[in-house]
Length: 239
Image (cartoon, rainbow, N blue to C red; front, side, top):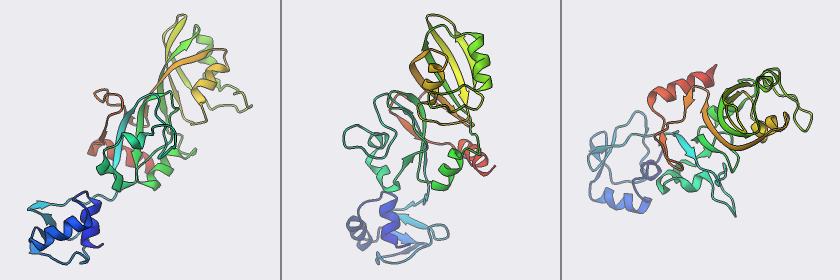
């Protein structure tokens, strides 16, 4: 990889700015000053420093976001704000995308990455990665609903869902529930409740696989996964 490309990709400035820094001796490779921006380096084997700071190369990046309502789980849109619009400009170089999607009016856990292989594995129906949601439901949710969800319900298009684990937190005119499913059909949680004559009025995703939403993240904020979280994710992807 060209040295100027490596440094610009890691957010150290434009290629022009990096070339100027090189002329001043601010960039070293294996403890030797380098002034040729086109020099090729191995980002894993070579030690690159800029103004004395070691450059830690990242090919892939993994972010946990607390997605707010009103924002699309997409990379771009001409009319509405997307989750990519919520990221700092320095993240543009990684060309991130959401793993799966949450409806525009749904909030909560969303994973963003540029690791296409991992995203494909997590979204594969064969993996059956569980996703847990918290919801407010217009209507009294009963144990009968719990049993029906466990058997799988018929959606409006005739599709029969895989079993879902429904837990009733509060049964009232507006009930509170948690639901774990292993699929990701369009508007699935909402359509499952419509199948039992009830309506979702608030929906939040709490977790995906082994990763739970960091409740310290305010709506619209995000952070990189910890090493422990990343290892759990990799183990799940490789199963």
